[in-house]
Image 1 (tube, helix red, strand yellow):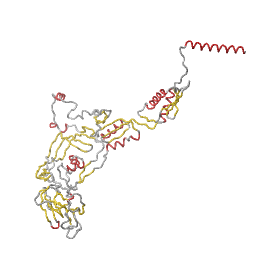
Image 2 (cartoon, rainbow, N blue to C red):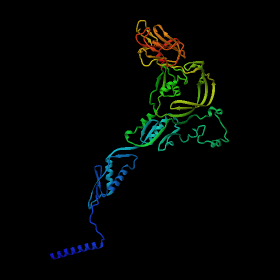
Image 3 (cartoon, one colour):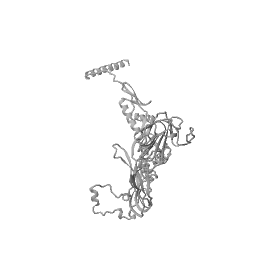
Image 4 (cartoon, rainbow, N blue to C red):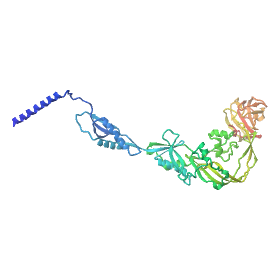
Length: 523
């Protein structure tokens, strides 16, 4: 048995050497083992092991596939904290996992590390107002609800269309007639044609004008709708926390968002000056106030003018054609008088209302009528117009006659501050150091300059509008009677002359010879 084993061992060694000899004979070169770096990777997504792979590149490619699979089949954007990590080592052999198994493990790890899901939503911008809605269907419902408030017969639909004025993918809301209503809703002029096309289309057709149409020939009802504001709609991926409930959005754009505010007229105000103060055009102020006929209507101290009207974020404009039997007023006729100030008016003829039948296109913004075009009119009783004579000259203004000073006594009843002083103060007093410059409150002609008994040294100035200003208790007079002065020109120095308790300026304004409260007339 031993001899047989030795024979087998000898045979094995003989063939091993023979094999080595043949390898050396037929292989041109032979290189020994060299290290090539990491070739075996333990792959993790976050802190979760997802398998082993043979290369880092393969791990990165499979991670991309896993992320794509998690986000596919939905319009949502999934934000995950998952990151890929691979710990490598160098081995002579090792077992790697099937790529499908690794991808499945990666997907599970990604889902477990989701930090936020963002939905494919839509941002609606109406001028400066913005709201986020979760779908285009909600956007359509938002705008459809706005027009349904005024479209009682359901003649119009809202369509979301690309905004042609935008270079990017921006939608806007367009109001269009529903199918079947196009013929009835055509306006007298067809804007789809222009130039020669219009001329050719009219050749051979009889011209029918409103003048020759009976009232029954007009098609009445809602003729046109649209939105007054610029509407922009863009897609975005937003989290739930930034989405607005559709009902809340509808309330925001259809309900009035503020209360009306008023402006109280003060001394020196004109409609044009108020327009500048509140940054609202004069025509708009006139439109908002029934007490104003036009931009030349007289206003008085203490009058309250509406300067803002509550409006929703989105306004619907529409044109409704209707038949009316109505009492109407003729337009006011104005007669300009270049010798009067704009504050002076006189009614030369009282108005009388008329009665008429009309067909008119009435234009509305929301519920408010903003204009009308009369298509046919039949006057039953003529209206008599109101005729008003009005001034064209801008009235002079009045300024505070000193710089600084402390108001120590107002206009009206008071306790006599010193023996000989009146208990009814006919002006206002500003305490100021002796010698303070006194300026003409308004341009005019000096009527008196000198001693004025209890007033001490005084200056009286007559003004173009018939008013007079008086400046009392002066220390020095710098003008003389008959002299013309300009507004803001220095006329005296303040003092303590006459019946006075201390250095100050006494100031009066007289209208038709009677003192009024000066503070009501100073700019």
